[in-house]
Image 1 (tube, rainbow, N blue to C red):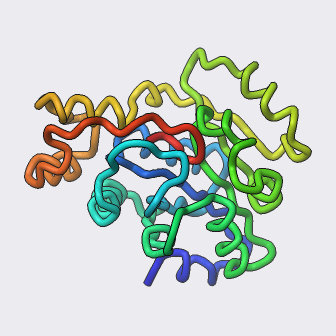
Image 2: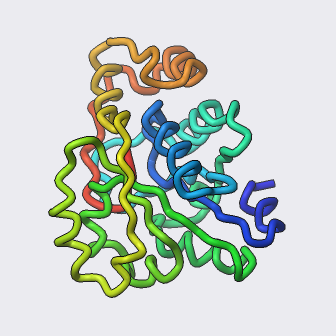
Image 3: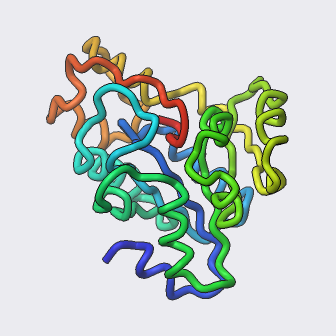
Length: 224
């Protein structure tokens, strides 16, 4: 059973939704999710790997591989779950469509909080139905220390519900999936940058060996 099916039976739940390609998932993603859980009093955090991501350029590891790595990475945290909702959905995955599906199945008193990177929020005006996104959820924009929040404030000034975007500083966000892909393509190790089980699967499968790193996100892809 997909965790979103089980969790919808809990009235009043505060659900964090950690979206992204997770190509691959790394320690920064986990630190971000846990910090959001604590700061925003989330009951659970569901990791939502994309199937086909909008705004994503270059090669991306197969969805099943990214789902497996996310499952391994989150297995030891009882508040973390991985959903197949976007992986199993046909076509391109847009945040607003995922949120609409979740809003249909969760009780009206539930709170959805979408966790993403501040870089992704800078492109929020290019998202599909950005105002609708902010009607359906609160957005948590994770930033690294020293991040220029002035740019973010300028972008959000064009949105009617900009007050539904909150920032959260995460030192571990200096780490990125693209940096990990570059190291792996160059034959360098990633131990301690990704969870131990993830590193083992990556090494044994060779899925990132000699691959050109995927292009940077320009929109709805939080944290790589």
